[in-house]
Image 1 (cartoon, rainbow, N blue to C red):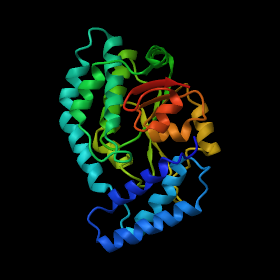
Image 2 (image 1 turned 180 degrees about the vertical axis):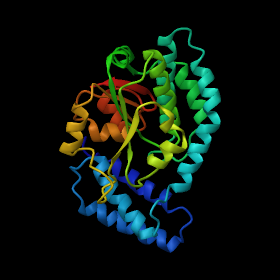
Image 3 (image 1 turned 135 degrees about the vertical axis):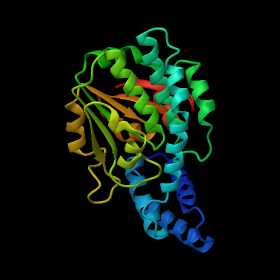
Length: 288
């Protein structure tokens, strides 16, 4: 997926949010640098490729290696506080299939914890709304079949806090299967960008308690942080797994040309909404 014109002001808003309590003069200087960078870059790139460049500049200009660090910590704490309630919501399912579907909806609801397209959201309200209706694109039955049949799972995470919802979903997959996967490869970011989940976030919400789980990393555009979403290495990686789940709109933007994945996210902008034919703030479980 290529950058749309509507993505450009979104990058600027993200840069302002990341600047937090920095002095106004520094904010202005940083924002002017971001605008110059956006003018120089090729807008034929994908949104995540431009985001990597923009946020690398923001981190450097602010002298802060992770401007969203405190936001991520608060998100994890919020999710952990909600964990008992979320588990009870799953237990309302009367059959294993219903419980798996409820946990998938929770994984969708958790995608609201996203400081890329928004800075304000109500997690508990979103959970109730998402549980009350079906996704606008709903390939859950195919997902359920693959959960039962696949021996290995590749799971691309999105945001801090949201990974707790992913944990509940994976726990319910294991319950539905009645046995562990031979391998679960849970993919996080290898370097900070926005509020994307990193390894420490996954560990903080207890994902390492899941049987046979390992962790891999996607890069944030800086050396040593991992491969890019659109790299041949990642494409080959995806093709090697019988079940691949990609969480979040950013991962959809980066992987939209790939096949063999389940995309699960809340649609947060009209560009993506128009591409897949749904309304903004609808949820999707889309196999491609």
